[in-house]
Length: 633
Image (cartoon, rainbow, N blue to C red; front, side, top):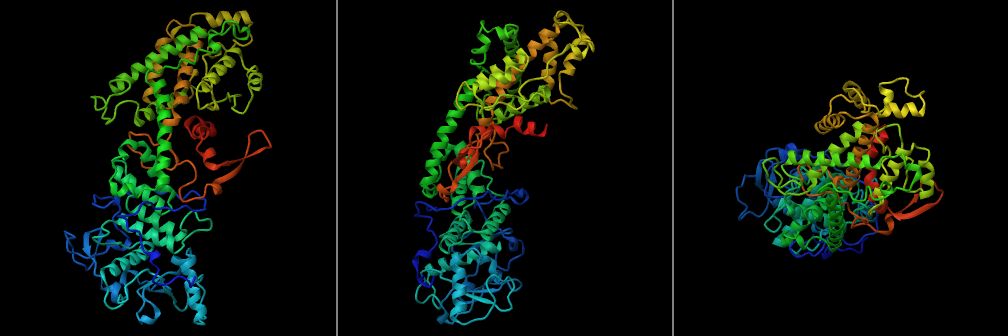
């Protein structure tokens, strides 16, 4: 560690005007960081994306307020506005806002021991806990001086430790006659410790935004070898400090600006923040076309690794959107009745009235199209019409999430929560047919039809856990229906019903509910109208036809309607936020991301990159409503 000299220029902070990348390859894995809830009450309109606002910035400063930074050497962005920052502390005195007399136990010197200069900062030793280099320097000082003071691990030592910081390239006369380059470097060092303390960062004409100041902080974190045990973060203190900064700034709510999204990508990668990086990445893919107009000074700072990931994710999103649009623009699912429902030679299902099912499906399709045309003025909706204020027309994220919510509400009303599906992706076709043979022929045929749809186009969709509806039954109005003969069953099932009988049968074929939401309420009215003059058998077939439509729509939506993991700033966002970060994160080693997974119904294991499991299409569906609701039932 002693081989690093105080004049090592490699310790200089990043010059954001000429850099071409931020995150060199590393060999680490990354755990999921803690989720933050931004404090929107502190958000204000500011010129800087991440203005400095630590806990001490709320106190009145003795520095004069300034309305313009022209001619000012340094300033801070406090809660009361911009204030000039006096630089004499950095050159000649201890810095008062970074001199912790209560908990500080490490004296930090910015000039060599032989310069005779006093310490500039007094900090807590926990700030150094994740830095191998700085801990070694403190220990070297103890060893060479024969000092018997307490170990760095001791939070409250009886005597102060000393750290002669390897700042970087200072001029020979920096201690007495500092040059402008010395001042910039000393400000960066001051900001490095202010980052941990939550104190306002000092800005300069060369570095006028807090974004640039934080990028410079990240360079020091790398150079001073900050890391947690596996290298996935810069350590607990740095991660906690950065998370607090994000929370105090109202987090990175960059919905409306591609430049702010770019800053999120850059800063997330710089600071090894999975939360910020993944959020920014999802927004960047949703606004991929607009990202081409990002400020050139920001564009060159986005690493080539991230740019390559964005290209691949954009292509994947285009494929998803094309598949969903083909189905939902007119609610057309041609594969639904192209398999078992088109066969006339299958004796097992000769009693199944596929024609009546399709009639019910078509009636439901027509009604849903009419409902959404009335709700949005057009289907797909047009931008800025009288009935919506969308900035983008078509099947955007808000439209599809609204459709998905409506269909899930209807699913909850109609689904049979006692009939768990025997279908499974890991079963062979023969195994599945054997299990389905245990069902009544109509239910077996329905499940085969839905399975054909799930496998009709890539990706293959996993079956919904509870995949059949409650069905109208004569037992609702005739408690002696079951003991009757098959001939009597058929006769009763086919007879015309009275109005009150139909109403009771339909009511009992719904799950219990308190207040129906608008779409299920509309459906109940539509179903009652359709059931006029129908027998119980006709209502039975009609319900299955409606269910086939509901199932096809619900199974088409999760790939676009379910946001990527970790996305929290999504209110009012019309572009899609469904693309997660595939592969390991840019600062992690891809080999370290490989894990061992067990296979279902087998003793075998598979060694796979975790992203292929966590972000697969199967994983996306298992996070959607029909799976999460099934876990509660």
